[in-house]
Image (cartoon, rainbow, N blue to C red; front, side, top):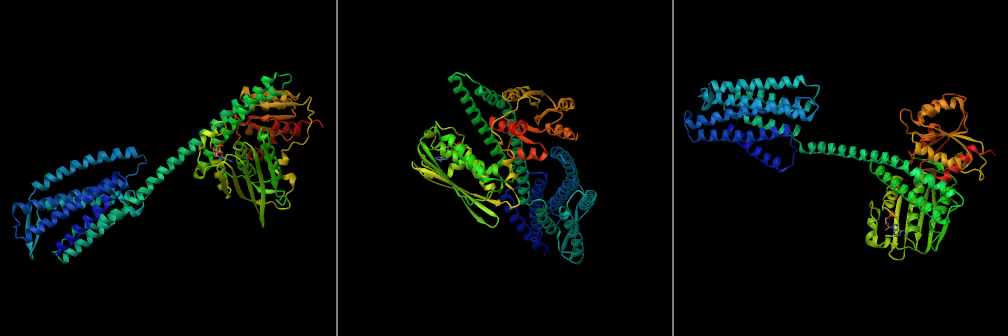
Length: 613
Ligand code: ADP
């Protein structure tokens, strides 16, 4: 009867081994022990069946062969229980560091090998004999007793490990141990009733299956490994974004000097024409460089899921006008007509991320201007209003070079430029449309491209924006708050303080401000600034933010602690990515001016805070 159980277990474990090894699994100490356990179990079951067969074929129990087979069975049992105890020890062991853990397990394993060799020696040297009761043969003698005592000690040790570490480990991990204890008790009970039922191997097979579901679920392990890999990749991506942010900040500082001095030079009277042209080229080149820096930063932020959509009330007409002006300036030298068609039913104030909406439309308008030699560009904006949602439908149609049908899919790949041989004279990085598409997705919009190669293209973007409630007035929109209010500047005699830890930046700002006839004072840290404002009353302060020891924001808050301090403070910073303007205004700064300093933006700040009129 017992033989049937053993044969079934043998076949079952064989199938189990086949599926287990054909499936991938992660190699760690637990899985190594598990592999050892299932193979040893199968070998043990084989010898068990072999012993039954010998007995059934009439092989005398005192023969050497029978004797030898039983000794091997005892050895198998000792090896199994030793490995199982080691497994319980491994899952109970709690030291965080993976490397030191593996080293420790290797040491324990060496000791266990030593114990096993001694046991092997004892099992094979200590006496073994058999008694036959009711036609059932029972092995007994010192070697059998030793095996049982050792198994008992191992189970007690496993229970101790489990109790000691019960807080550190999920209880289900110990279920093979519980199964082991329960099946041993059940086996003793069953065997006392039916002495010919040898169930030990059957119990072991059950424990093996339970073990599979607790330790050796390869899917769970794979997911765990995938999660670790995902976290590592995310960390690497974040590190890349941080690196790019820092780089962009660093690049902006020298770029600020290049554009700043070039601006100042450009305004210089009596410059020879050739120098004027060179200065214009410097300005254009630095603008493209800035565009590239911003593009790389945007794409890395998008990939790290760090790009936020910052909503505000804004005037869409102001944006469309700006876009038209910018596009016009790009096509002045080409025989291209810009047809503008803006639906006047679009609400005056919308709520959304105006910077990103503008960036998206500007990208497709710029492309139309870049890739069209002659003809026209039609910039059309219509709207669909449903409740408080206004769907802006912006289309830009050109009579440019067009895009081959099979290339349209590649249009949105990073750094992918199509038709390179025809585009060599046109500047670009291949980032614009990749960013545009991601931005449109982030705003839950849609971007559709239609094009006929050689004839022209049409890019259509639709983005939903909220209609601002009627209580919001035009004056509350961000653009009006920073708009150029007066044209002519009368700022003579005004004094300005520039706070920046970088001497070159101070030089640039001073050079640009002195052109207006303003008295410029400067200092290199927040501490110096706090000292200066105690004795001097400035009309305006330009404050860099990223300064060592005390940041511009900290300095600003310290200044504001004095209730009599009323001087307007402008954040003048290379921390110029999208969302920074809102951040600084929310901190309480009066205005924000990104580096490299743009003459127009500086003009508007000077007009706003220093104009005598
Ligand atoms: P860039 O213009 O910097 O190369 P973009 O991502 O904006 O990068 O555009 C990717 C490519 O798509 C361009 O190199 C160009 O080949 C093609 N493309 C984009 N817009 C147009 C257009 N309006 N007409 C023709 N080709 C275009």
